[in-house]
Image (cartoon, rainbow, N blue to C red; front, side, top):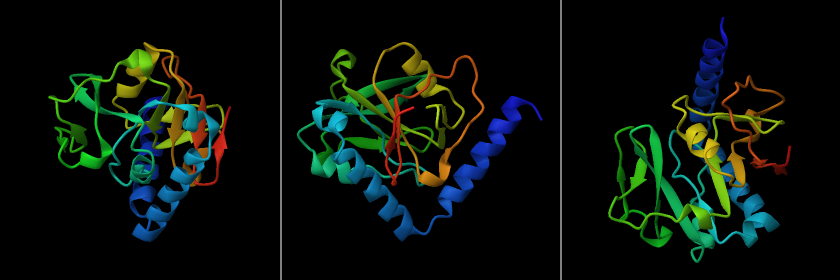
Length: 188
C-alpha cells in the first residue's frame, strides 16, 4: 500500500468513527473543545480568527462564536482550488451562509472579505492530527495550499481519539502550531 492509499484509509476510518459518535457525545466533546480554546491566552488575545462551520460531525465551534461575538470571524468559501475568507457575524450565521458545491456551509460572496494580514489565529478543521503538528484533512489540499502561502498561527481542531502519535506526512504538508482536543491544547 502506498502513502496516498494509506492516508486515504486512515481518513475513511477516522471520518466513519467520527460520524458514528452518539450526538450527545459529539455535542459534549465539541463544547469541551470550545471551553479549552476560551481559556487559552492565545485565543483570548486574538481579535481576528479564521474558523470553519462543522461538516460531517467535525467538532462544532458554534459555542465559541456565541460566546465571543465581538471577535472578527472569518469563514472559508471554496473558489476553484483555493479558499476565500469572508467575514461573517455569528449572530446572523444562517442568513449570511449557504450550502456550497461540496455540501459545506459557506459564507455568501456579498460579505466583506477578511483582511488576512489582520488574522491572529486560524482554527483548522482536521480529520486527525499528530503530536508533531501534522494534520490529515479531507485530501483536497485546500488548507495546505492556503497555509503554505502565509505565516499564520494555526490550531488543528480534532477529537482526542484522532490526536495520534504520528501521521504520515509529505513535503508539502504544513505543520500546525498547536492542536486542540476536548482534553486540552498541545503545542508540538
